[in-house]
Length: 318
Ligand SMILES: Nc1ncnc2c1ncn2[C@@H]1O[C@H](COP(=O)(O)OP(=O)(O)OP(=O)(O)O)[C@@H](O)[C@H]1O
Ligand SMILES: [Mg+2]
Image (cartoon, helix red, strand yellow):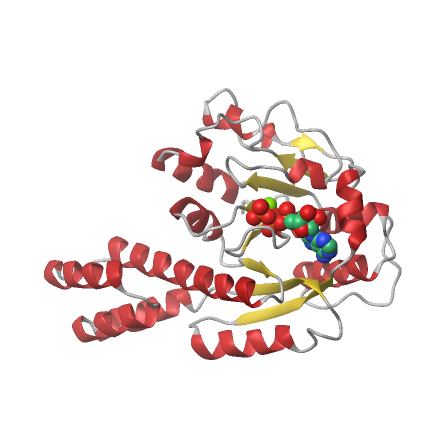
């Protein structure tokens, strides 16, 4: 399996990008597969993990049949390590940990299995790990999204999709704050009151307000913890003229209303050939290397890899 060089005694961590966004069918799997392939081009090892448990289809976007084994072997203890369940894909350096062979009950993962999986993901010996998540805001999805502080939200310019993305973001904050409250020392009475409020609170600000009334120092600490998120946003199925400026607007609103920095990574144009590629069982960015959508995805991959857009240098072919 792929290995990443160790520096001294320090075990290098993969850069983990969970890809979520609340609404179904917005393009999370398409974006995950495309970015995985583009990140793998520079000799970096990439693991894609299909954690849309019960509805996995990432292999189809990669243009490959469902692997015969995958996550099921790790969860049922037939594989010792998670990386040994990664299957090669048609792209060099890109591997897929699929959940397509898991039982139909996989969507209701046990708590202990979830913790084991999250811990294993954090230690995967790859340069990049991209996690494809399902729709909705169930606890498993939120906890997988919280595997790293570099969560990527994918939405389309449709108002319903933007609305669901905001709900998803709020749910992520609520989940994280509740975890912090549970894990940190608090006066028992205050903790009970805060958790009670948290269960009914609509926003993370409501919870912070009540934390502040009991313990202002804790409020500062919690704010610092959630301030470490570096959330990112991709607008998929973008129509250049109609949707210009929308991504930056959402970025501004998020930066104003939430506690941590948001970065709009870019738009990915709507292209009928994405659907054609799925029918043809081919990876879009490989099948269509020169379309506007592929170039936009390249810019986004470059931002994730280097923190800046691609230079004018030619990118290696897939
Ligand atoms: N940029 C695009 N242009 C055209 N079609 C697209 C684009 N992105 C995604 N699609 C199409 O939208 C559909 C849904 O995409 P995808 O399965 O990636 O969404 P999803 O968010 O992962 O959905 P789910 O929540 O069900 O997992 C697919 O049929 C795909 O072909
Ligand atoms: Mg999907």
